[in-house]
Structures are given as C-alpha cells and as structure tokens.
Image 1 (cartoon, rainbow, N blue to C red):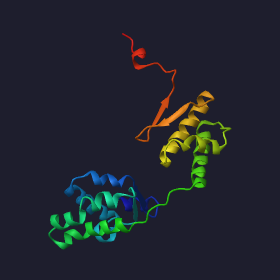
Image 2 (image 1 turned 30 degrees about the vertical axis):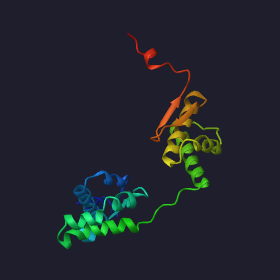
Image 3 (image 1 turned 30 degrees about the horizontal axis):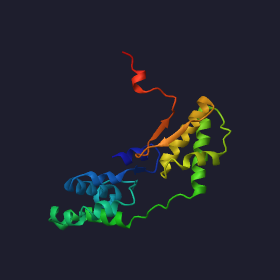
Length: 196
C-alpha cells in the first residue's frame, strides 16, 4: 500500500488534493454514483478502504450541490440504482458530506495583492531579475482580466514575462473561457504569414 511506502520513507502519511471534482457532474448517472462511492474510499478510509495515514481533500465549484446533486436527482438515482441499503451507504454519506462542506470565501483585495506579490517575487527569482513595477500596478493590470484568481495570476505572469523580455507590456485581454488573448494591431494576419 502507498501509505506504507511513505511511512517507510520517513513521512507520517500522504495528502491527496483533487481539484476540479465538479467534473463528476458530466458523468452519466451510474458513473457519477460510482465516482461518489470511490470518493468514500478517500474521505472515509477507516470505513471503506485500507488507505491508512491518508488525508484527502476534494475541491469543487460552489454550485455543485444545486447544479449536480439536486438538478440531476442524485439521491433519487442512488435509491433506484442501489437496492440494498449497505450499497447506498457510502454514496449517501459522500453526498451528505458534499452538502455540508464549508465553502471558501472570495479573497479580498489585500489577499489578492499578497498573492500577486508572491507571483512577482517568484517570477523575479526564476529569471534572476527584479521588476521595478509596484505590485499595485500588477493588481491594476489584472483587474480587468476577469474575476478568477487563476486568470489574474496568468495575466500577471504574462505582464511580467513581457516586461522581462521586452521592457514593456502590451494589452492583455481574457476571452470568455478565461484564457489570455493578446492583441496587437501590428500583427500580420494568418494569410500574410502563410507563404505559397
């Protein structure tokens, strides 16, 4: 078992972080119920698995309960798919655990500023340079780039990359998917780049 290996290496155990758990909502009814049952092995290892010395955290979007559990009728589906109560128990326990899970509060302006300062510091250490840009300017440059922290981080990294490489930064825009898109009116069109 993996936890034994970690203990033999001198660690107390292991931590498993699973992001984007809300993607379970894209699965069909039976596959979704199986995913919940598998989650029980991680969330309640003493009852449903032999995962010793393991701490697991699942991260999912705040709307998961409403968008998936309620809209897709997961409790009702569980009752029809699992006839035996003992089969239902792990899945039901996970669903109730998800419903009761705490939600993270959005970061305030000072916390976002702190994260962007760390990004700026890491960028400087990675490339051996010091940005003379005040971190509040980095924050200002990312404010119109979207509300998601990861989008702001990507915009900050792009801004710092441009400053490091070119000494100036162009206009960075974030498209509907939250991905950076870089405009420059001086760029040639695709047709101009393709040579016959």
